[in-house]
Image 1: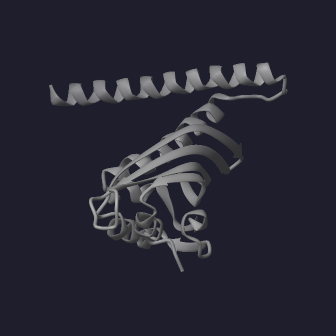
Image 2: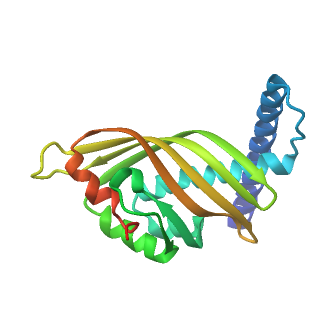
Length: 195
C-alpha cells in the first residue's frame, strides 16, 4: 500500500510540474504576443523559468526558516555576492558552504521574512539571469531601538544549468529604500558576504 501511495504522489507531482510548465508557457506566449516580439517559447523554456523562479523563492523561504541544509543545494560551489547597497564594502566571491555558515551565524538572532515577487527571467542557453522585487523584514528585540529593519529593493540572480538543475552563481541586492532600526542593518547585511 505504501508503495502505491508513493507512486501516486510521484505521478501527482509530475502532473503538477507539467501543469505549471503549461501555464507558464501560456503566460509567456501571451506576454510575447502582447509585446509583439517574435519569440519562440518552448515547454523547456517554460520549465526552466519555473525552476529558476522556484529556486529564487526557495532562497527566501529556507533562509527565513533557517534551514541551511535545504538552502545550500540551490547554489553553485562559488557564489559572487554583492550586498554593497546595504552595508558598503566590496562585492565578494565566496564558497557556498562558507556563505551558509555566514548566514547561519549572522541571521541567528533574527526572525526574517523575504517576500520576493515580479520575477523577470532571461535564459540564454545554459545560463540565466533574473530580476525580482524584494521586501525583507528583519526582526530582533534589542537595546539599539525598535525591533525591526525592513529593506525594499530588487535582487539580481545569475544561474548556471548543471546536471542537478539550475544553480545560483551570483546574488546582488539593490536597496531602493529601508525603514526601521538602521542599527540592525550591519548585523544582517554583513552575514558572510563582506570583505
